[in-house]
Length: 197
Ligand code: PCA
Image (cartoon, rainbow, N blue to C red; front, side, top):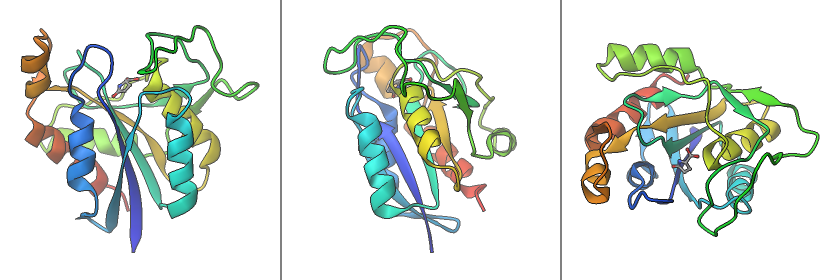
């Protein structure tokens, strides 16, 4: 039996819904291919997010780690290629603002995803879900979580995928941006996990 730690984030900033929260809750405990999914919801909090995911990895020793986040405004599923050692941007959910700050002092500038991101993109596109590799996970919480996981986890596939907004989020938040149905987001996540050996 293999396990996959699947993480999502709570709502943040001007987004009253985070579609990754639903996906993680719905998939928790289910089986996809040879993996049983362990779902974990992360806070949008610089102090806590990294610690929570690393604790969970230590506790459960999952065979793979896939973290999900919302990239509002993107129109496709975007597996991230790289995490950088930088925190800079809008306030987190506790009002903490960081500018030009390292995630890990004296850590490497970046870490490449160890997930099969090219396979993810190919399989998603073949399955009818538009996807492309992203070369920047930003400098906010998603990049932060991706960086701290890749700093610690060297022997298993780990990385991050950004998802577009859901229809529900766009309607509720009165946003003018591309959106997908929850069902398609959910199925796309299953397609990616299904490519893992
Ligand atoms: N997206 C944000 C943080 C939480 C989320 O879902 C990001 O891209 O950093």
